[in-house]
Length: 126
Image (cartoon, rainbow, N blue to C red; front, side):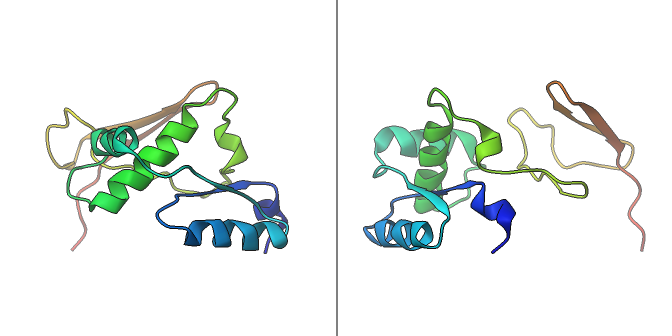
């Protein structure tokens, strides 16, 4: 286990009581782990709003639980993840999208107080 992992918090969706055991095992190894509350209708609906719609019900519930935790006061994304050079940020298709990307499209990712990364989609090589 890297020291980087020991400085972060692992969020564990509580899909069953097994999550409590997993959290305890991680904490016994010195990993900060937080078992989230049981999912409810609100977390499920929150997950549905932020997924593409083709995922399974447990995915909706887990996503909603994690997003609900992210909305709590004092939450900091840097407590969960550190981006290092070469890391990739992958996202789904945003709402209002006009379809798949094509050659010539410009994709921009902006991170507040850091900057904008801009990439133009190239033709696919055969």
